Length: 114
Length: 123
Image (cartoon, rainbow over all chains, first blue to last red; front, side, top):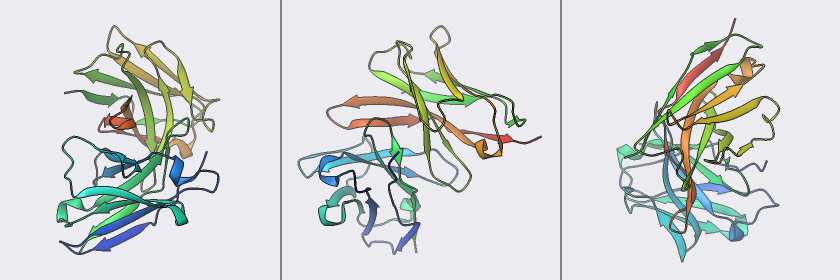
């Protein structure tokens, strides 16, 4: 089972842009992987936000604001969740996931909106 | 709108079997468009996929749990169930059920999830 690496925590102020990274292990290429992102608010279940393969192959789940987007850093072999115009309601844990044959999650990043 | 709800004992003794049920409303577990999953999350930790079942009854499990886990389907009740045998304290977690689907628009995903149920393994 591959291990996806996410920073334990991140913080930003309202109105700013947060970039949360998800580093893939060496035997998986971010250029060849769909990366999925989930949001989990305190005490609740995860919620699917979006997936990203490339700038021309991506999708945002229904009801998710367009402030949520994604990209990738090929040199770092990492997927990136981008949340612009941060709001207090965005404070949550964010998990990345890949699906080589079965779902594999990262350890999650706790985003604090200061 | 599809909804999932987990149910089952909140306390299980060590070495015993954990049994949970997920009741699906607003959709059919027999639909060929979906498959049905269990995921768990220890307190303060990340998510671990446990396994899935297809409408045909076919299953796939996380290799780290495969020897102890089974997932079954009850189409008459529109439910699917999880059994995890020989539990230890390390199995204490919130257990979620989730619908799995694949399409060209949004890829493979788990959506939606149930609210989750906490299972504690303790004597």
